[in-house]
Image (cartoon, rainbow, N blue to C red):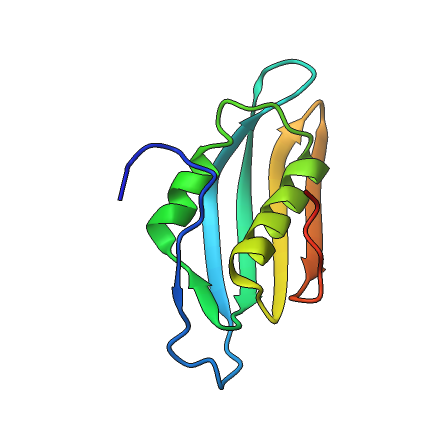
Length: 123
């Protein structure tokens, strides 16, 4: 597997697809750029999902999140994009992605988006 940032999420078969269980990723080093100023935005991403038939492979998730580092995104858009991309890759039974962004302009922003395999990812 590469160590280059990538929008490709690798997956593997769920070892217990007959059981509901939650996978929780806490990603305290998420970075993208403010689309208005070009300044870096920092966030802690909290990703919780109940897998269906497939699970997200961790190194590919790290490289996927890293791929946003030099791109401009509004907080709301990037949080929804991450949910959409994970849904497209693994069709989880349930998923919640929370982006807890550091203060910018005196405002602390937290964006939470939820769904599941019934979602149709935006394309």
